[in-house]
Image (cartoon, rainbow, N blue to C red; front, top):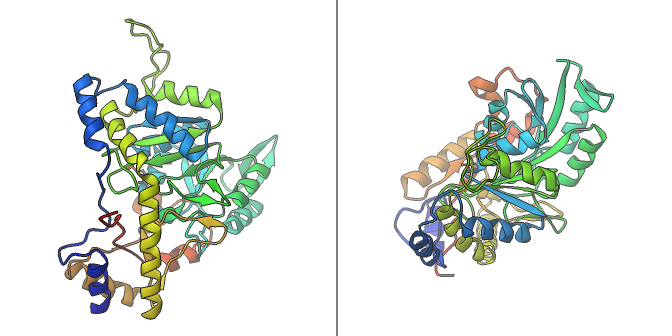
Length: 380
Ligand SMILES: *Cc1c(COP(=O)(O)O)cnc(C)c1O
């Protein structure tokens, strides 16, 4: 394990503490921020929000993009766009960041957990299909969960650490069962499944620009969709449902203040300009890690088949809980930050009574997967 610590320090060319993932501000960030401050338009409206939305939509290949204050807000609104309501049910994976479940819960809907695939770490189409065939029926175009008598409105797969899940198969299953597909693409900007960008398979997709994501605006998020009416609705309800008017305040429903401030958008426009460079650096790091861990009999997690991953957070798969804990302890004690994958959502107090399938793959990964330093290396 000393060898691993030495190698990571050598790879990042420092003997100092190596964080898991730090942002890089090496482009036009300061220039755009200064310009934004000088313009005084730092808040709810401004050209950077518009520029970002246009550029982001172009980058991922969607028709519309609506910037939000963070990724959780983007997910919350995405679920509302999918018509999820109180007491509806939403299928998702147990191996995810808490935000996925928080967004479902904000609406008063309930998550159902289906297992993940071992290679993608994302929602398993086989597990999904099996769950639906065992528990559900479509009645008058509505997917009913026979065990609870509630409607399953949406399915939210997540592309774990940027590795695309089997999203095409998942989409096909959702179509058959009349379930709306909403992608939690928070971690997968720059990741493609069969040459199509993640987040564009679902009716709606959500991304995050939190400080640890591949590009950041401090805090921020975005919703993407090809549906013009949904895009309009997303803009409306993320901006307090205010009817556009030069001076009057008229709002036509209870809505949200989820817009991205222009000053954050200024930072984000500069970050997005560097995405290709960041991606190249991360793929190079993945190659370096792969070679090293291969020689040292530790399994490095690679992009699954049919996909191109952004390698946002690099990860290894250890033998068992014991080896994982030793690895975590040793690396963190020696200045190399590492972190275990999330605890399963169904094991948290709030979600322990939720319906679930056999989650053996999720459990297997939970006990073994560890993230290792993944920042873009300097200089690039
Ligand atoms: C980061 C992240 C989000 C959104 O997080 P915010 O901090 O609200 O931007 C949602 N889902 C997943 C899986 C994430 O990793």
